Image (cartoon, rainbow, N blue to C red; front, top):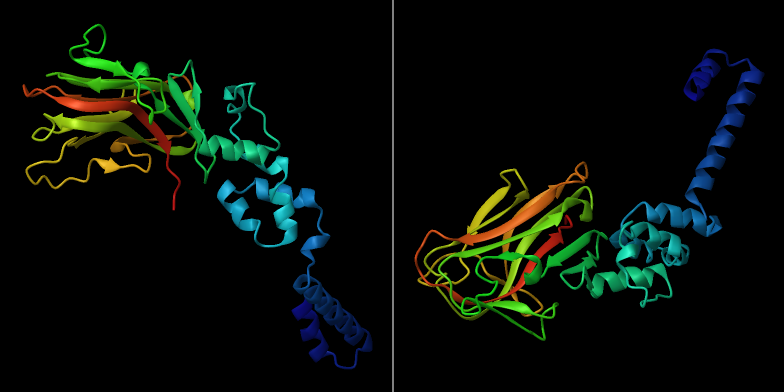
Length: 295
């Protein structure tokens, strides 16, 4: 409309009324530009900032806190950090624990994994995204020859482990470990990777034959890969990898939870059953299901 009026003005230079109309629109346009260029963020209510930040992510919230004092104040509100906490996470927190703010609760769940289900699982949040992560203890896994056969596997305490006891492999010929977790426990629309977490105590028998690893919904093919749990004879492999907690891990596979299935189970397995070589020396802490945050 504005450009059309200017065209009419050129065609009708004698029309004073039209000139006045264009002049007033020029003035209003200039005022709008000035107002947009000098917007005072501090004039907006804190609740408005909190709502905006709650629609981002924990990582973005920390970054926005550096923009201005107004944003910094909003990022400390319980409303923001309440939105980052998974709906089911509150039910997993023991009543003996108390926190002064939702942000403190969030950070605690990121830094201090909780034991749940009678200590058979470990639960925490991914710091950048707030997605739920878990580790299944050896007692929560199906380990062939670990029940009533102390000459194959034995259960021992380990001070640097998350659980009261871990499984130490003494010797087996048939190596088979399986674990399952309900998909409903995982965060929807989230990319997960599973890892076998262990230590090597004079490990042997895993150098010439790789362990077959898989991750997938029960009843489906899932993702598959192989890894050597012991590096020998110049094998050019990327596993195992050292963790910051002093343990080792091998990636078992990945899974994207679309959030449309609530009654299925995710199964992870580690097998080496096609060779007759005796194996031993592993100390198993568990299987970790970790949310992966895109870069």
